[in-house]
Length: 391
Image (cartoon, rainbow, N blue to C red; front, side, top):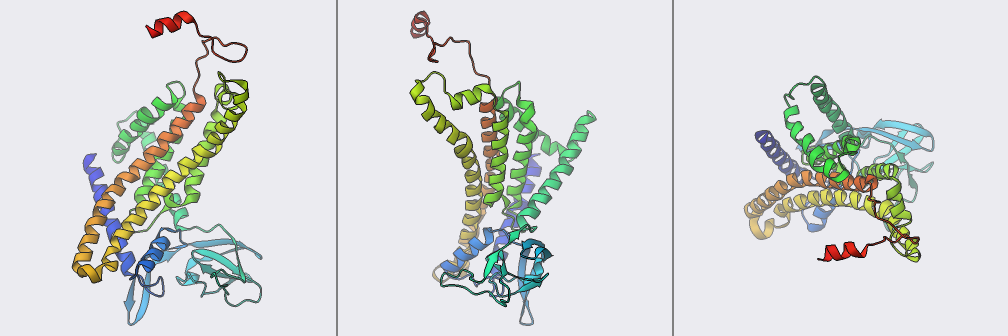
């Protein structure tokens, strides 16, 4: 297993270095501006971590003409004339609103990875002083973007791989092939995350969800280190959806004790209970899911930004350090940061799953009610018990 994991890590490192270098080297005026100054590097990095309607792998020049290598994805939008579909190649890699695509009586442009519909009679997009379109509006976009494609691919991969593993377990066979790599991770999530945090009585009910979340996030994080430029878990909408799933599960599964401690906390003065109820409700419905979505989103996005920034050293410092010096420094720093990113890919999946299990465990935990309480809800303490515990 160790050899397999080492091989996967090495492949991920090579992929991310090759992709990142190629990404900067292939920048041109047709696709993105030349990457030379700090401002241009910042703009390119922000462009890189965004979602896109097509895959752009690299570019090259042939006979004075710039060629782009990649493949388009389906564009599905709801316009003023209804549902419209076409391939993203119709925009010809334009992201500045210069290319107008006409379909079903509507005209569309792509601006900063967003698709706009031009007003009737407009032949090109017009901008105000802040570079906002004045004669175009956003449409409902249901397109198959890079992030959506990544989710579909990972979902299909998990169905195939874990379906095969489940069939081997059903036949009471020892897992073979790739299943032998997955089995220790499945057991780890079950025994080290689900069981301790949820409890022996109810952990099996939620283990399936925790396994799905763990492997889904982990595989997507690793996919983000490949040359295809996936940044699925670096999209706020994706992490928010995952956090909402956890929110729904622990809200629906919460028992009587859980809601009693939130809405009418026992053991505290009555006047304080409404204040505590507001705080507990904010924690359950806002703070907990917000911490889940922001932690995953921020760490994955920051990792991509750091790697790309270190690789950009070869362009921004080539005049002061020389081409060889800047390139060598850039590669060495990017290599070590990428090693850390491989660890972060696993760590963030672990943290999200651990916190989800912890929140679910708090909702389904059975509290001890053996102690007596007075009429105001305060616990009745025996003086003899206090004396014995003190001694």
